[in-house]
Length: 212
Image 1 (cartoon, one colour):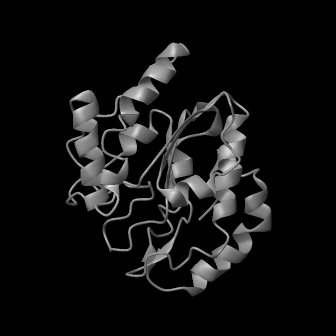
Image 2: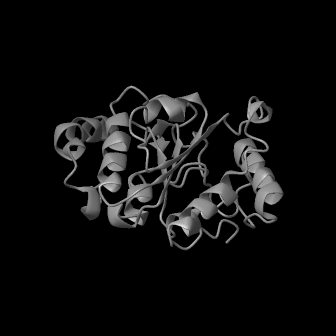
């Protein structure tokens, strides 16, 4: 569970991580496991980060969480929120990925970061008060040093987690969460994928190939 090299200088890893690491070593049955806990940061160094998508915590079902927010392993049926994300994507850009693995987004500079990077099996939010949120805030602030970012903030939790961080030069798309309970309150019809690509292209950057 070593900090990702490109992010290891963040204050979190000196001030907060030792205590969280010790709690994880003492805990039993947590996800996504030691090999994937920093997968989101390992996939995107701060100078390549272009888009921020925040989740709350990893899926608490064994076999689902892979360290990237909203993502699941290719052979796992789509969770309901991800199913709605893909439905909106089809309406927006006419296509969606073939499975729930979003690692191809991360390879293009999309940070798929949960505000808590660990969760007990079967207990959503079980590690939410451990101080993980400071890593999310510091990671975003570090990436902002390298240029404007697009923020895709689904639901009140994500919007509260980054309050005060988006700047005038950043793009911020804040809507309802894509969960079945709230997707029809502003998520559906928000067309976030084409809006982000338009913003990137206006700045001379290549678009994100959302559908793979």
